[in-house]
Image 1 (spheres, rainbow, N blue to C red):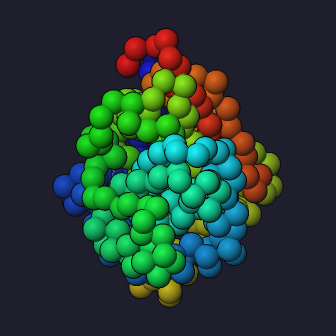
Image 2: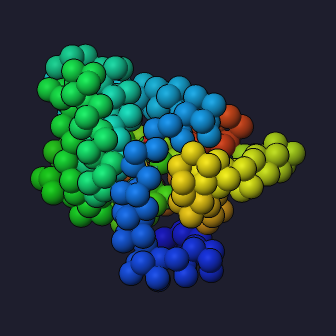
Length: 257
Ligand SMILES: C[S@@+](CC[C@H](N)C(=O)[O-])C[C@H]1O[C@@H](n2cnc3c(N)ncnc32)[C@H](O)[C@@H]1O
């Protein structure tokens, strides 16, 4: 039986309905904030987001000649972290449905001389345009929470991962210490939307962020969702007291999709 995925808050549901559904809302929001996205990440996390992607990239541990998918690659920072933590002949393909985010990402790859190693493509993460088993590993950073159907998302990731390949999912989670959790929510729910208004000119997008975390499964529940999708040896690591969780798992050779 599938573990329940919490419903979005009524306020978020209303936003999704007004936009014509969650994917339409999420896509147009990222199109809108693409130019300030990287700066906001650095400011909101006091520069820690790069270290968290580095941790996820080390879990992916791409080997020589391997190919990884960066699902929901956005402006390319996770794909770049993967490239930096892998041999030069490992190949990375990023997929995102926001053309605005991809445009920023492609400029960045050109600037960094990484366009040969990393390819960014437009596409829907829930219906990937790749053959079964096309990748040695699939990685995502701050994406799963945005999917319209998280269990189906993990099944689709498994479809495109080869047998014995791995998945790494970096996502916001829920701090386990109640006092820290209180302070974190004060910052995240009150201050982050104001920073979004000030720096990103978008209160709406940066109030979506805390609301979407409230309705995101906690780390043990996300582990069960992944197991239900057929992933095995699922384990997770908390970063910054559970503000972020990184789930890692293997695609069993023996279990059919
Ligand atoms: C918070 S950003 C993360 C970007 C990047 N992974 C990073 O580390 O900064 C989430 C990204 O996921 C993308 N996204 C969300 N749902 C998607 C879907 N169903 N298909 C493709 N991209 C999706 C959004 O367009 C956005 O660029």
